[in-house]
Image (tube, rainbow, N blue to C red):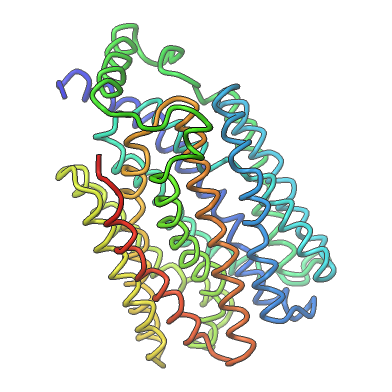
Length: 419
């Protein structure tokens, strides 16, 4: 890569990544804030662990159903309009969670939230393929996806503080949490309309020479790759895409098993206040953020994907299982931090591998299909842990099962061709 195109990509990265990073923080926080709300909401609404796990996870069923159509629409009409639509509707639904009065309303709004948000994450991944060549994607995706971990770092203290507003203006703390954490999505959805640029050719914030250099680099990248999937039908017929989807399934299983249940796990281990628990939850996410960035940079530098995914999955799987054998707060934090490190480190190399042989509308469909199938794990993980918790009155066995699911990853990855 010449120094000229490197400077252009640096400029693109500075323009797009911080903003997309902010959007994803809001997205992920609106997904997992239900885990913090549960510290008050479950007792207020009479939700059992099984009911909460089902309601938390049902988000991913509607998300999965609407994922591919949403991303195909985005590919056809542009990211600017469609991402704005997604954010405004999910922000409204997320704030409406404050109106829930029982399990039925909880299930309904979580289902609607999944439908509203469907297409956001794969839409951003597809959008990034329009701006960055393959060799840059692991670090670019990792820079964007560390937002999931920063959301955990920021969201814990913020959610804990909002819960402490319990009784203010006649609202419970969990109602304040949903109301105030849903509004930023609506505001940012409007900002998207004015800030995002659909294609490099339309980027007025690049000079004419920079636009041509970027277009030439992207075209050269496309020509040197063997794009195995270029159509919607091709995405559904591709064995490679389905194998990648099965790998990705394990990530939401573990990520949301932790995201939705971590506040309650740490509440039990620490016996601290809601605000103290909020600060404690930042530790695993902070460790995970470091692991994600370091692994992604090394993966891009070595141009190696499969070994990075396998190593990270093994670290995560072993750490999840080990967390079942500890009793102290320190032991719980150490093992779950290592679990989050392994889990987060998978993501940059995985999406670099997943986008390496797709092109055009086929890329939009393939990315959405991988994410949609994978995100059914977001239903399985929380529901499974809730079911096991109701029957064993312990998180231990649930964490072992999550670790075992991650341990399957190496066997699947070894069957996927690299490039």
